[in-house]
Image (cartoon, rainbow, N blue to C red; front, side, top):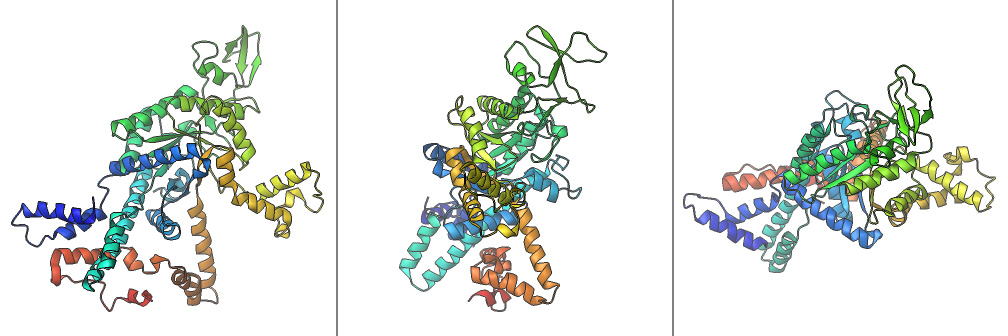
Length: 528
């Protein structure tokens, strides 16, 4: 529906009520356009369709991979999307990621917590809602600017400019994009997972990521001590999330099944088995067992091929898997997740290595040909060291002289600017493109980037402002850069909605409106 048709529609509604004096159809049309999404479910349905379309495009050509950055506050997410629209003209293929790690570290009422699902589970859907509140406000602010420009064009009699602006309004692209939201291990049993998933979806999430760790033993994927659950337990939670999507009418909602088995050597349960070779039996086949002839007090035994086996049990009451089985367990986890309702996979690895990732995906695709990954380009990886070591190893295997380099010291600044360092940087630059093509990665994300950028920028400002530079530390390092780079936030009152408020005051009170954006507003200093 065009801008003009929306005005006509609003006019008909107002015309039916003779006592609605002073309600202007065009103002109503503008407010409706600025509030396109009425509920979180509207957002979830809209963004789910976007992700499905993007997945289909990736299946046609892996150059169509997608990306996101993790954001821990609505303002951070808003500024990210404003920046993307400014630099690239479109939000296509760019999402938001909501990291459970950052919720735990930054959004818990208990204060900073490790990534162990100890934070309030309701803080995660609250952040989803906050992110979308800020993205919707970004729409309202940008459209408000177009409306103001349209009014100026009309007042100046510039018909061509007015038509251009009306077209820009009709074709306006929203800042609202999909969120891949981390539900950890579901914060409890399958019923708890279902209830929390509904909160996620009602807040706007179209894509929920869930992992196969034991909920009350959850650890960050890059830490030790991870404990996985049998496949049937994980499948029950995948089904719980799917039921939540279906109940709320978000039929195209997506589930990302994350397996931590590559780095998880422990399980809390011996899986239930109905017959040899079933999924429970396959899970148990990886247990580290020893054959026994007699039963000791308190022993737990399983039988296989006519033999009695005792799984190794730790003082923590956990059972351990055989060393070296992580990749096989990852592949099995992934296949069964995709066969039981998951749409995408997440394999948590210990390093960003295309060969390792691609090898596992190739095995999965022997069973599920269109299997696709969401991959964590994690700040827990030392990218510089990892890729310099990969180049070192490739050179050494090719017979190239590496005697000038100490493999264990490749992070050293001494190697910056060398041929090896330059090749490593080029591999990092093309990692997403190359792994999308060679390792089935549909979506690349960085889980915690804005946690690190906030720390780095704050450190730089504090060093300058509290040092000899004083106020110049802020002006030179922040404000001047905002002006030079066209960062809209330099007009912070406008970004926070002051002009939107003025528009509404004028709608409500007409000429009697007391507006903030007059000649004496200091934000006018940034007009040039």
